Image 1 (cartoon, rainbow, N blue to C red):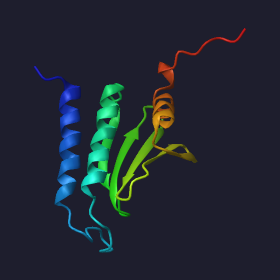
Image 2 (spheres, rainbow, N blue to C red):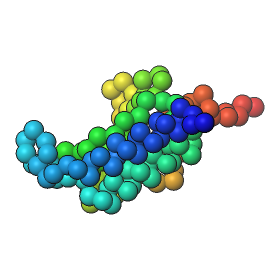
Image 3 (cartoon, one colour):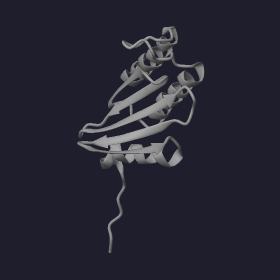
Image 4 (cartoon, rainbow, N blue to C red):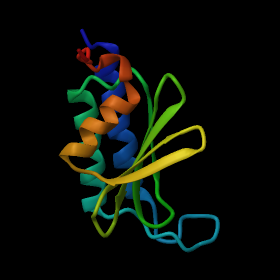
Length: 130
């Protein structure tokens, strides 16, 4: 039996793969490059990371990036958002935002942990101060 999270992960991977069918100049301005195979592969890795960290129960979607590449968007339950950019040229980043505040970080081991804390602060095992 397939559970809901497996279905969601499968749907997200399918949505990323569908971006392969975009042509160059796909946007309304006729200027956006199609996502490269490398950008698509990195977006798949972001989805796999989200699944491994049990982040699949939040709203997640994928979109082509008008600058070229793939964006993986995660929407926290308390208004906080994470936008992971997988641009064609590499150098993935994450933009964390809540209300009108936002910060951009390189997408690496440290920012992955920060993204988890940001989206799910209730999961952090805070230690009391004495």
